[in-house]
Image 1 (tube, rainbow, N blue to C red):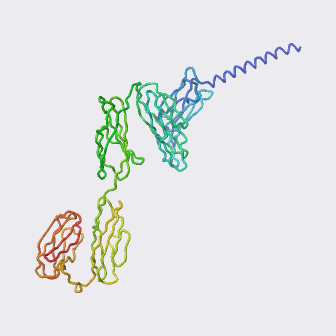
Image 2: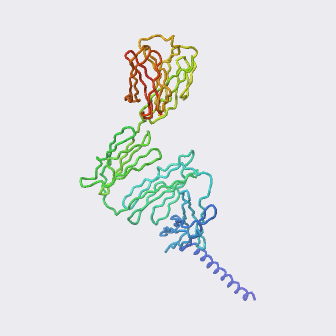
Image 3: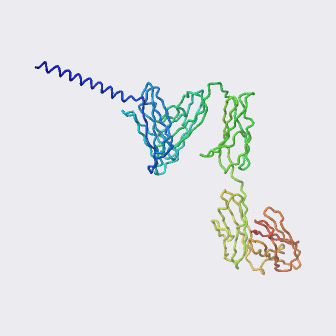
Amino acid sequence: MGGIYFLPKLMVMKNILGSLVICCLLIFNSALANTVIVKGTVQDANKKPIANKKITIATDSLNSTTGCFITHTVLTNPNGYYLDTLKCLGGDIRKLKISVENCNGTLLINDPSVGLNSTVESNFVLCIPNSPVPTNCNAQIAFNVIGKSVKFNSVSSTATGIGDSIISRSWFFGDSSSIISGNRIDPTHDYAKTGSYQACLYIKTKAGCESKYCVSFNIKDTVFIPTTCKAFFSYSIKDSLVNFNSEKSAGANSTDSIIRRTWFYVQGSTQVQLPLNVVNPMVLFPKPGTYQVYLTIATKSGCESKYAVTIQIPNSPCAVQVQFSAERTGPKKVQFNSSLSMAANDSIVSRTWKFGDNTILSGNQVKPLKEYPIQGAYTVCLKVKTANGCEAELCKPVILQDSINLPQVPNDFIRIVSINPNPVAYRMILTIWSRNHQTDTEVSIYDIYGQLKKTLAKQLIQGNNVLEINTESLPKGPYYLKVSCKNGKDSRSFYKL
């Protein structure tokens, strides 16, 4: 009986072990996926599907066997759904990199592993409102093409936030190769075919700032490219206008010629491209400051050269003119008016009045009213300062005395008492005082450049004389009114509306 029972037991154990081996083989084989189905959806923050959105699907070069470097691009359908199949002949696919561009231009990347059923689902939600993403980072790429190999360098990429740093760099080389993720600063990539390519770098910082930068270049068959061409330019500065001259730029030899000139200038983080293929450009810079100007040339033989110069655009020259009038409104009161003071292409930001009695008024008051403690003669000074830092000062005598007590000085034969109104629109009423009777007088109007605009002759009686002058033909602006006779003269400014 014991022997009869033992034989079936051995057979059962043998069957169990065989099943285990087959099961393990099935499990092992299912983990090696050479055909993978990738699917998923793309929605916005309101769970609405996004159609015609480009999805990039690539194998991860670090987690797939040799030969399985695949990159596919698919578009979502009207329901925001996408589906793709990756096949790797003679190898397996273990991990993927699936990416889509977000609404703000940043890149969203999922890196799922391939499951036992060889199906990967990767869904994306775009345009999610959140707290402001930092923007103080900047991706930059320098590159050098040598034959079909390109050496990239992103050392100039920056993260300028306090305590911030770059934690991720993703490289897209523009061919069918896989994305390089991680934080590689200077990868080298070999291109299999000649042609035009665009490589892009996406960076992400510890604070969440993201930036993208792309460069375009051509891969050519390996040929000898001369390097002896030379880009060069001289320049001359007049105010904000700069004349550049690149006529001394040269090709690699006497038979080589320049076929392309590329100009641009940089101030801070702003780069401005200038028109292509201009030998001697004239550039009007927008404001004073320091600029870096670059010229890159390319020649018929394929030689390229770059030349750069730092230039300084100076501040605009000071062109400020100080004017003020003083009108007596009481025995000891004077109304001052500095509205005719001007600053060309600038603005007055400060007026300091010194009234001649040891009092000072700071700020930017245009028409201060001053009451003096006693009558007398005072020297009043106005000092102005502009937004560009220009300064100018004007001083005038102000006399507060009754006319019967005024000293008779040799040149006090004629005096402008008042201009009414001031500013004037169409006509002014001019009051002129004359010491003598039948005084032959010339009344003249000059602009601020000293050009005579109007003149007339009058004979004055002794005392105050009232004249009416038509100003309708005068252009808008500041003017000077001058009265003169053989024994004296006087002048005063006014403004034409």
